[in-house]
Each structure stands twice: as C-alpha cells, then as structure tokens.
Image (cartoon, rainbow, N blue to C red; front, top):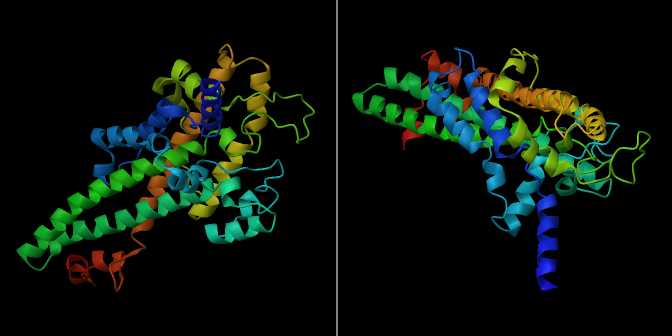
Length: 332
C-alpha cells in the first residue's frame, strides 16, 4: 500500500509539472531560432556553438524542477498562464491588457480571489528574459566600442576581457530564457483547458477530460517531429512596431486560439495514432516558437542601443558616438 501511495503521489506531481514541448521540442526551438538569425545580429550569437548552447539550455528550466519547495513554488508558474475562453486570466485582466508588472498583475488577480502562482505568469517570464538579453547586448555594444577606443592599452584590454565575459553571459541568458518563449507556442500552456477540457467549462463539442497534456507534448514530439519538419514552416521576421508587452500578448493570443483545433484533432485520434494532420499541427506550433524567439532576439538587439549602462548611467548611443566613456563606472 505504501508503494502504491508513493507511485500515485509521483504521478500527481508529474502531471502538475508537464514539460511543455519536452527536451526535444525545446532543443529544436532554441537551436533553429539561432540558426535563423539575420546577419545584422552580432556574429557571436549566430555561430554553430551559439546554436548548440541555446539548444542545450532550451530544456534547462524543466530540468531545474524539483530543486526545492521554495524554488519550485516561485518558478513553476513561469511556464504557463491560465487563459479563459474570453481571453481573461482566470476572470481577471485580459491577455491583451495585462498591467506592466507582475506586482500589479498579482494585485488584479487577488481581486478575483486568485493570484499569479495559481494563474501562472508566463507573459512576464517572456518579457523579463527579453529585457535582460537587451541589457546584456547593451553592455556588449559598449565593450566593443571600448576595445577599439579605450584611452589606454590597459583600458582597451579591460574592455576586451569584459566583452568575452559578456558574450558568455548573454548566451546563457538567451538560452535559459528561450525555454519560456518556447512554452508560449504550446496551446495547453496558455489555457485553462491545460489537461483535459475541464468539467466546469461549457463543452458543446464533447472534448475529452482525460489528462492529455504530457502525452501530447513530450512523447509525441520525440516520436514524430524532427528539425526538417519545422524549418520550412518558420515564418519570416515580423516587425510588429510594438514593445515587448504587446508582442508577447499577440503571441500568446495566437497560441490560445489553437486550443480548440488541438482538442478537435485529439478527438479525431490524431495524436493517439499519429496522422498527417496531427503532425502538421505540432510542427506548425513548434515553428511558431522558433519564429517568435528569433524575432524577439532581433528586437532585443535593436533595442539595446537605446539603453544605458553603469551607474550613473551612460547611454549606449552616447558611448558609440564618442560622447561618453563609461570605463570608470564599469571597471572599479
């Protein structure tokens, strides 16, 4: 009996910590996004080694699960957001009208007798990683300038060393963050119908209430999808002319719109015994993750020259124009 109880508990824990696309899907999203970067993005982000590192780190946020109670309680809700059919998050703020910070998001959810840890905060995990990458690239821009324009040989050597360190930091931050962008292309990570339709929701089409989450993602992708299935489906870069909050909302709304098509395919048996329609659906969602990750990396690079570095802050644009040198602020 004790063994049976332990097995049952483990099954519950596993079901509550489903791993989005699984290691294969996340690895392919992260790798292919790097390979699809345009030439105007810094070369260190476009090397085969960078693609390999991003692919390795893509599944990392799932590997970290089980680090401890405090870690899991804080980080597990970063992987999802429970969006209702009316595009509200558990009846609170709408997905296309989220407040600018997690603090305000949590406050609005509290008014609906819930919170960010129950509802999930995937939009903020995506925005957070984007902003960090843009800041990394702002420092990299300054290092590149200083390596050529430092006042002394010692200063130029310091900038050169800092550039190498910054490249390592940026690649790590990018790879770790790529996981959450990948989560955003998986429909069950942006819906209240995340593991069966749910008995409390209207279900006129008779969708399953079985726990379909884990079988749909990780085992299905591992058995049926390759990079060659995804590459032809990756869309061209989309300049949304918007900030990261708007881009993220658009991305997750498009993902949530695929929940009903997914359940229809499941009802037709497309995932139990793989069909061309089921395989095409999954490959398209993975390709959406690749395109969005690539586009966000491009946007982070373009944003980076508008940011500042050091304290007191100096604008990157001023540094690159030769109007400021942050060596004193950065090197001590």
